[in-house]
Length: 402
Image (cartoon, rainbow, N blue to C red; front, top):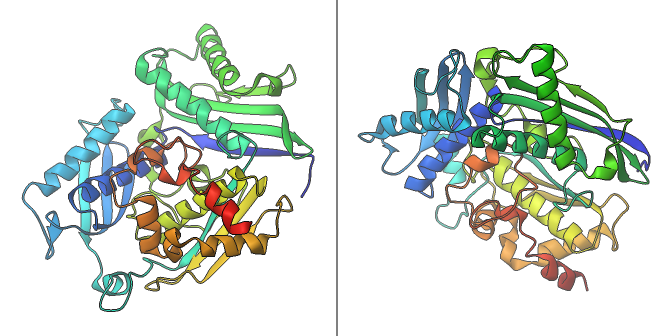
């Protein structure tokens, strides 16, 4: 591993068109799981000027069975979509929660997929698809996340909180951030460049208003980043293209699953390629990515490594994972193979089967809409939400390795 280098990660706000799509898809997942914890959902969303389109496959008791919708179900779906857009804050001429046109093209799950995934007879529930999933953790921040991504997320989350509270009424929902840090001896040493582009109310393209906006953003950055990382040498690029009034789905179309690096580790870790939002937890793209983060975070929290990457692989319809791989990047206190063996020995993980993962983490619940903006990882576990961020496996890992 290099010890001295520059590294950059980006984030996007809840009002970014792709994130609007992600939040709608996950709001639909939550809606169906609230009706049927065993529901099957694969919901894709398209957002563009005054239009939201849903497409995908579902199976949900009491909502969609025998190729037909239950009375009132489609109306409830549309209400959920509009409430999600309203919560984000879109009441613009080009995208308005009340005025947008809505299309629902969800249909029944393929029977051929269902037969591979569903448990039957002596067959355990199989994975909802083939694929590889990665989890990651490092000691760069208290959340055990890459610092560049952690700060990028938190800048935008703070700006959104100020927008919603009225503390920054000049902000509109769409925004992006990017943080570049210089690392020395493998640790964050200085912020060399920070980029923030935010949609704003009309009139903020004059010199006076631009200065007001930039001062506000710099104040947020100073609140989020540790003071020792900022200096006179930090370069700020705030709305570098100038005016940014047209944004969100009116400025650019949005699709579910187009921000997978933002959703995960900001490029600091490999990615298996599968998106999360819009998928129920039988889809290992989602659930296995959560369990690998959980394992990696607990390994770092246990002091077994300063940096950890974990990979799992699955075949559609097969319950047992095809492989488990642990890499502590030379920072481990014990051999990586011993950590792999320790993970396999912990019975409560259910052998890392799709059902075992869902049971251990409690994933068959409507807990997903909050994941769809500001990252799925590095969040605070509260109640049923973000259970993969708990560090309750630390002592079990230590005991298994001792």
